[in-house]
Length: 316
Image (tube, rainbow, N blue to C red; front, side):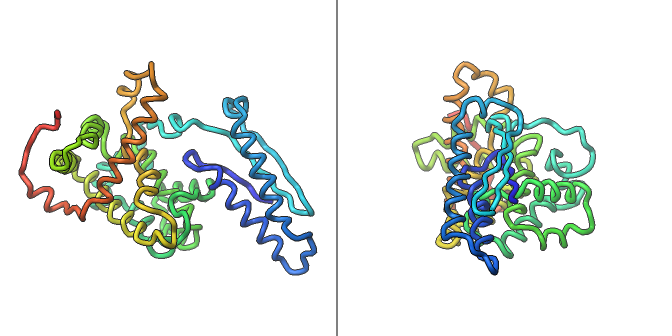
C-alpha cells in the first residue's frame, strides 16, 4: 500500500511519480505472475482519479481529507488528499516561539547559533549537493510529508541525531524541508519592506538602471538575510549546472523558490482585494523573474556589495 500526501507546492505529476515507481517495483518482485503492464495501467487509473478529483470544484472547496483505494491484479493503492490554495499554503503567521528554527526570525536564529547562515540551511544544502544534485526533479518533486515533519521536529529540537537522520533520509524530503523552512519564516527572506521595490526594479527596461537598482536592494537587506540569500543562490546555480541530468534549469528553480523567498505582506495583499487573482498571478511571475535575475547574474560577493557605496533612489 502506498500513502500519498501532496505538498502545497507539488504538481499532479509529483504526486503520481512515486505511485508509478511503487507499482513498477512491485511487479519486479521475484515470482510475480501479474499480467504485463499492470503497474503502468494501475498508475494510469490513479492518475486519472487524481485528475478528476483535482478538477472537481466540490472536492477542491472542501477542507476535509478524501480517501480512495484503487486495486488491480493484487496491487492496491490507497491515497488520501485534500486541496489547499497556494495563497493559504504560503500564508505567513508570526511565531511566538523563543526556541527552534521554523517560524523564527532568521536574525534570531543566526544570533543564537553564532552563525552567518542558519544551520538547517547549511546542512540541507550540504546533503543535497552530496547525494541529490543529480536527482531528477530535485526541489520540484515533493518529499513524503511525514519525513519532512520528522526532520522539522529534529531541527527544532536541535537533536544530536540530526546528521545521522539526514544521511538516511530520502533526498526529496531534505529538499522539501529546506523549502518549508523558508516558507515558514515570519517574513520572506527578501523582506516585506523591500517587496514593492523588488517589483519595481525587475520591471525596469533599462539594463543599467535595473542592475543598479537590484544590487542596491540586496545591499538594503539585513546581513543575515543577504548572506543566506547569496549562499542559497550559489547552491541553486550549482544545481542548475547539472540540468542535463536533473532536468532543473535556472528558470525551474526560480519558479520553485521565487514565490517562497519573495511575497507581498498581508497588508499589501489586502489593499488589492478587488482583483486578488490577477494581482497574485502577476506577482508570482514577477517573483520568479526577480530570483531568475540573480541566478543569471555573475557571482555576487557580500564583501563587494558592502564596499560599494553608490547610493541612489529606488523610487523609479
